[in-house]
Image 1 (cartoon, rainbow, N blue to C red):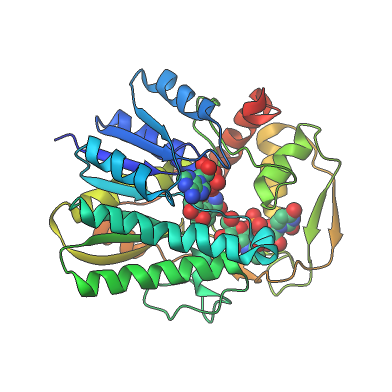
Image 2 (cartoon, helix red, strand yellow):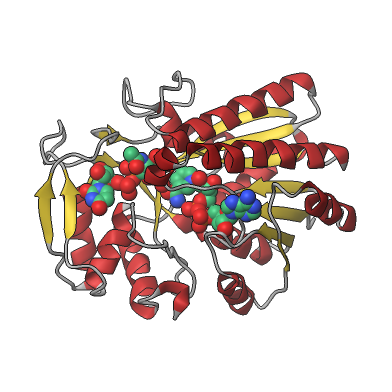
Length: 340
Ligand code: NAD
Ligand code: UD1
């Protein structure tokens, strides 16, 4: 049966891929995005690809009146909550802005939801809440760590707020998804990741070197305790991640409470593994230099994704080759992202 899903941050990278999958499965989708870090073009392309319509509101989750109006106009079944600021470096410069947007924004959203008796939410958390891993692979039952920046703190705070909310009112149905490192793009090459300015993350940096927008990649540290000395991460295809959200919604159709899942592949690749895999997929050479470690980075981080497999009936389907091919198709077809 089709549902009505309100997606905050739905014009962004992961949001737009998830909206596409929701439309394909026949759901009604309402997107709320202030376009701080996105363009409406992503949603227009999602409509083109799927041949389906969606409702878009350019609104801020901090704007109580606007949110109240939107919830009054639609009978929303569930919310997928992507809206947030996510630049780690920036979060250390303007922490109050990050806490206000991410934490206050989520509180505001939940208050409006409760007022309209919508008590079902899937939240975008991050593997960053584990801090420096005490053991690998990371399992959801392990204690969370100390995030090294305000962005990470905001994610951990929101997780805790959502748990308190469920304690206070057991009617809430909450799924917390801890993403590992999303990369890749929809196979059409029409939607993808379009960071503002210099990319912080590895894959968009690599694709921008490949397309000639940057001269060379800086590899942050080659003296970690990993197979080649460079940092190891669990890269996951954004379409796999998007489908994880659909499975999370299924999980809370019946069951109340809070459920927390890692969304990763369970396999770690180093920075140099990524460079090699991307070169193979794209036929391009990626110039790189070895530089000092980036403060706040951990040596290795990868998921135990068996809880999502057992309880959500979800597992990542796409391998590294496909992730690199799809990242490259998006970047080579859209060298300047959505700016044309
Ligand atoms: P993104 O920046 O592409 O998407 C976030 C969207 O939220 C943007 O479209 C932005 O315009 C919107 N937004 C921000 N603040 C808003 C507000 N106050 N009101 C309305 N809209 C607002 O980022 P993404 O990579 O798609 O990430 C989605 C979510 O997943 C974020 O919460 C992010 O922290 C989380 N996450 C991302 C990663 C990653 O590597 N991309 C990893 C872990 C967690
Ligand atoms: C980073 C954030 C994390 C956030 C995640 C998704 C930090 C410390 N962590 O995770 O909080 O949830 O992004 O937004 O910023 N690398 C290079 N050169 C580059 C870029 C990255 O060598 O130009 C290396 C990094 O050192 C790391 C790996 O590539 O080993 C992946 O980096 P990145 O894509 O930034 O993700 P994380 O550091 O895992």
